[in-house]
Image (cartoon, rainbow, N blue to C red):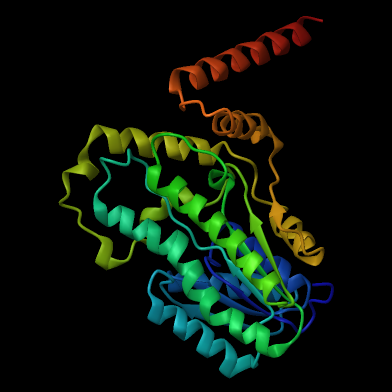
Length: 304
């Protein structure tokens, strides 16, 4: 998409993190914006921010994208107001730490519905609209570097990000086979200072049950502390809106900003190609060795 001015963008998870940065960049580029989030109070602040950055037309929709009927509301409202959809950014996502066999099933269901099925719901409705328009359009799905690699402690999150990436790749092929003028893309960052570690704030009532003993367990408390740490010490959030929109401008598919994960991605890819069993002890030993080497190099540089 070379021209953004007056084009219409739907952005989910718009009230914080990447979504808020995407709204800001869309505003700078003169787009008409449909900002979607489950927390109504935070959306008003997004509207003010967007207008400060040049937005002249922004529509706020409070919706739970894990519900199909809410995604219907999003698409219907967008078409009633603007008559077209040029950019879809499936960005809403949640995560809860915990081993796959420990997490309550409601957490699995919530994460699957939000991180994967919301992409399905919106693309099934938006893509036919884009194809009927006959104009060049874009879809950018936030999938995370977790869509390329696996680790323990957050099985539902990794599972859904793999699925979202696979979905995007499959739909990309289907669009090409159909001759559709729609450029798919996937945004796959590592740990960034978003609001992902506060996913509990976005949990719908139907997925709540504070009485479940898991949420009082040491496993959960430890997982939350570690999750907070990796997000709070992650990459600064600023600049990702511009990065992703430049990728959209060039119709790029893979937007993978953090090369620090390349070694691990290659290691796990090699495991598959060599038919090796995934071995946690080997990975942990490799990580330890790299940390020790980095610490040694830093100490040597300081002493020079």
